[in-house]
Length: 570
Image 1 (cartoon, rainbow, N blue to C red):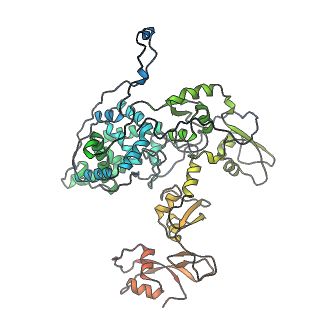
Image 2 (tube, rainbow, N blue to C red):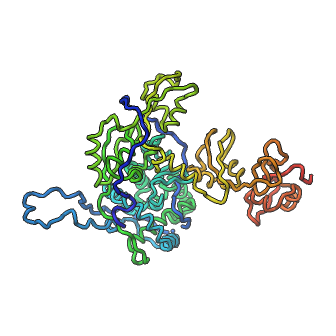
Image 3 (tube, rainbow, N blue to C red):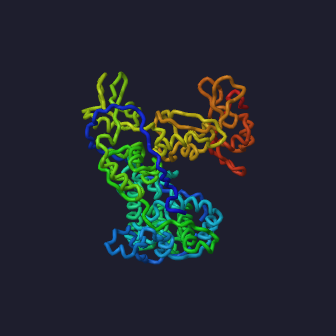
């Protein structure tokens, strides 16, 4: 794979649109407060779900560091060597450097072998992952070496997120290192409407290294246990160790009774290590990644429109988002961070162009005249910004607005749809991509709605429903929130009124006799008997209650039924 994989640097000038007022904006100095969220369990994002047995040694190797700084200008003696071209030297392959920094045990185990064979069978998957990893890998390897961390950890984002910077798991974990909200907050990764530090390549890598180092120390240098704790939490690993100690059993990773996902998690990493160590052995062609920096950090000191960043650095807007995936919207966050990661070959171009660009034009502005019914929340939503920022910019003492009051509001310099990798546009694309053969339904969340109740109503899975809306099942639903559902329910042909249908049995509104009921299993009941009693089919009862074909009913068990109460047998 070539150094410029993933990031396309075709020079396309970004044209601005929207005619806006030219009045200079007020100065901004505000920080949007971080969002505090509930604890959740991190989840790996790989597509495998199989599982590996041995003890990690209590040591880490310190790989030799290499100087990869760009060559400086030579003295006049260079005239004696006119053919010397230091810049043209081969930077080498990062995989060679990673192999040299391996420090974890080289183990053979059934679970490792299972994961290894999956990767071998799915070479195209590895190719895609390596392509995505290209721009970030050198930065991560440098950070790991500096902290004397085994370079196997550079492969961990493959297991966690397949190196997808916008990855979001069913466990509410985000970014290439898959931080959950609570852990991210503990390690200083801010999360607000404008910015999510869990996806920030620079900040999240630093946080991941600090977390992994703390786990290594907690488990006395045993990296396999540290990795297990990174996936499932220290408490799970400690509980499993204590259980084995009471039973006088070994306490190495492969001997512990851990969650299924964690039992597969560490073997995935060790399988990847085997592939990187000797790809030829497995008849794999591991695409090269140049062992040279891809991006550098550039300070900007204030909020700035990301389309303007792309224009001044002379690269595509998507490139800006891929290197700076922490930014959720059309601009950097007003409260920071006030730096950007840019491709090395474009960084100086950006600096020079930014220095000549008026600071007050880093954002576009409109003057909004307050009308009857306007609120800060409505105005902010219309202009894709936050009420707090409008309030701060306009020095409002409260949320109250007056008719004909004039407000200055920052706006995107381009149509919002052109910011394709902003959180809003990514969600819009996700929600409009057909997911199954169902009918697209947009539903507004009402008080009392749950993921389960909505999923049942449309005969879809809870995880599916959450994924279609860029959320996790543990995310809280809010009344008024809009959800897209690819509903499997069909309209009942014999019913003239508008109804929702599950497996051809109607869930009614108040005008109909079809009702959702809970039935308690009695002595002598069977699925067939219950089905006859309520005039439904056995298959329907199984589907509504997710019962396996050979499931047995228990006395007192509650069965969910959707029935026409005028058609029951008693």
